[in-house]
Length: 432
Image (cartoon, rainbow, N blue to C red; front, side, top):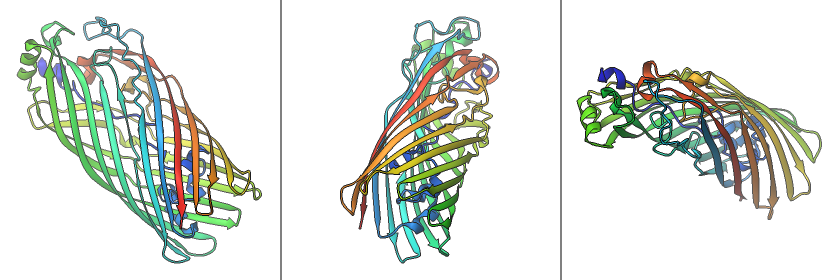
């Protein structure tokens, strides 16, 4: 009975971020000002090695870009009848978790080096996935999630070659480090008919390295137009770490120990998805340019998440059944003077989560609508600054998880979030 109740009782899910799923596209301050519209064709600074490495071929001289994005997410849950497996209210503490969004500072650095007129190299250090969410430890959904923290660091050396005036190609390799922390409570008292009276708390941490690549091509049919196509590969991670338990009382400890819910080594494998991006850029004149783009992300790789333990505790399994997604964007760039640039953009970003039954409080994600403003100012011929602001409207994410199967011990979680994201970005660009 105990093994059945807790067979999937501890860790499931992933983290939310600013793009759909848990991707972070905030890799360029210039790009943020246009909601990253047409990023595969923009190719204006060294951050192009993230969006399309072929764009490096357009850059002259040596470029250094240092930027930071201050991300301010909000996710406030409203309970609408959550219960345990016995039909009893889970909201015994009258606690809906507070604001699960946690502010984060996401830095990035890019350097581009001209080896010759046609051959360029560069390197970028950035964070392509992750964010942190955290609820009160006694909130109504405590058996599903308390803390979810994913951090990645990607080191991406790249190179580009201009084949002709119209065609450029580029590519790079990625060395990616990932570190994750997942925690939630467990209702051990359920095994003796005393639900919510003998809780335990488990926290799993793990880290690991993964490797991948990115490729791109840039076509410039005229001096005022360009079309970019870029591919970024999946990256396989095997996160190794451990799970640590604490217990509210001696009864919870005894029940957990009997079921092998004890401190142990743990691991999980995950494929971070590949993307394909198409971007279009067209300058109508010396002042006004239009950008548009589309990005496909292979989120269907996330069919399930499985955590394995070196103890006799059964694997934790969560069925995700995510769908592939599309992102569409449109932006404008206006050159007010030789030193001052203005930017504007909008985007629509689909969620990979198919329905309320598959939504987890670790990622209260839904379809997103972006509105962005930005600008740039040249301090001199070599030094410039760029700034941007983004607001993301998130459709109210709903959850309807029932106390069956892998969610039996967690109970039924029913409700919705009021969610949104604000981002403020600033960078310094130096050409030499």
